[in-house]
Length: 128
Image (tube, rainbow, N blue to C red; front, side, top):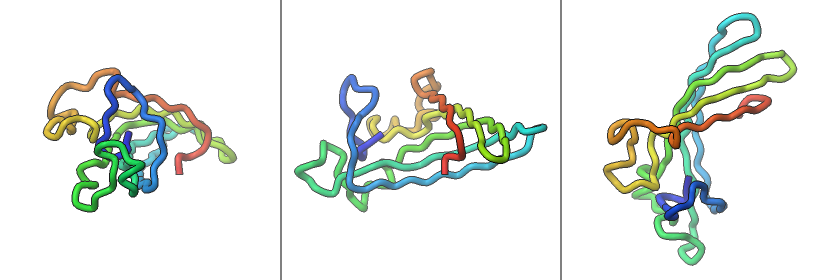
């Protein structure tokens, strides 16, 4: 994602940092059995530049438009809680993509999800 609503044709991942980073995570964890826990989560955020000369088109922070440039991902996962460390496996779905044209950014309202909208993550420890 990002910066802002910037979209580079043909690029799957934009490898760039920015001056402003806004991130929000919400996770609900629940016990399944033994050491296995489940989780439902939502991640919201993006990055922006504050200097016009260092910003690609659509990547400059503007207080009036930044809310529409927030990316949203939802998903579910499992946690193996070993008390001292936790193994996580998550499957996330891209829900709002600010790099798409306006009116097409909410994916479930405009088209069916595809495998390109799914992300898998394996990690040790909680995400926050």
